[in-house]
Image (cartoon, rainbow, N blue to C red; front, side):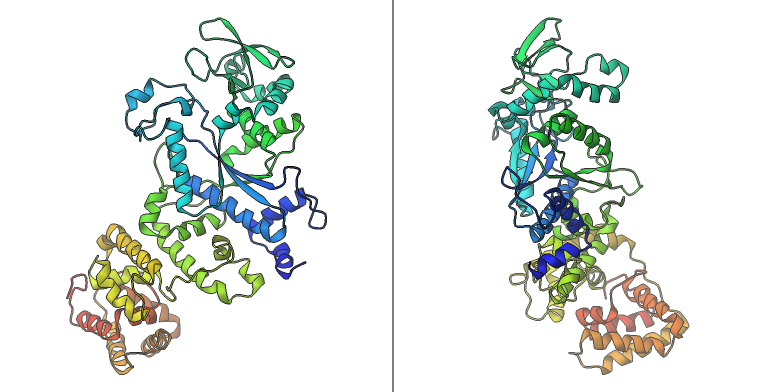
Length: 536
């Protein structure tokens, strides 16, 4: 057994804990054997009635982290299916699409039978949104295989599962009916026929089943009785039964779901067992909250979208936010972004030098599958860039690059594209959220003496002094004027007087970035009573 596998077996990070559940499912590390299908199957689901959203990203990135951890524990091949429920009937017209009147004419039809409202590029609404899903996942470099419910139903690949559902129809109905209201129980069936006349997915009573013939008889909307096979795409399953049917047909080994779906997952697991299958290992994660502490809803549009996050921060910082404490409800709003970026930058910088066992606990290991990229951003923080934009009084990224080259010698937008993108993110965040809230204040009498001392100290130190050397000099200047217990106030003074905020970056790194002489000029202006909120 390799050292890495031994370390993985002891790793405490939650993706490894989840991966060990799959190993145990297969018989344990000493007797694990490849499933009959030839691989371990991870799955995520997607409802293509809307566009991909931040929950889609979260589920795929977290599942990918577990898959990567499993690969360190086992040599059994793995696959990740991203399954689109594109045979679902269109229940309502989404608010964020064009041609609403046209879509309204196709309510009830499978999403893959509804015309594309965006253009004539795709054969259906479902196909158009599936393409957007694939483009969305591809943009993050996820390794996955796209699967279409319509293709599985109509090709016959679901036929054995559907016939098994028919054979166990009464047992499965008995599981589902107690979960429904009395009125709904009267018409509920796990099978939803696709009407031959209208093409709509019908929620109508099933009056007879014939397992030997593989058919059902349902009461149509006009009151007539219609017999139809359950195979060949003539029916689809109600979604909880559909989830169970997919688990059974594909022999899914692992799937995540939100906390709100725990009861549904339990029902689906019961159905899988009735069919003679084994439910997948599961992981339920907490849901995100908006700025008011309310559950994020894609229909309400509260919270934060992936596109909005990526305007202000790199995708890796969002992956970090998804990795952190997935079973704790967290606010997902603009104000969490700066900290997420800086935590990511710190973690990825530490990863190459960490001991192997500790590296497996580092979230950056899970974000990058154990390979730490060189972003050419050592020592750079998002907070530092936000403050740089503030004291430079510019939203021009090219102006800020002039300062950044001093801190990262030789770096250019061409040879350090990640740093360039980070600067673009910081400028956008500064303009949209920070600029209007900058509040500079004048120093008090006691603070003036300390600031004058710091200015004199900075004038004496070499221009090429390191950030750590400068940090120590800032600290020593504070000690000459503040008691040991008041040194936090010294740095708060620097932030409030020079940067216009209550918090800030390490001053040594910031002074190195902005330039010793530039910081001295800031101090001189503050001591002269100037408003540092205005450009010099």
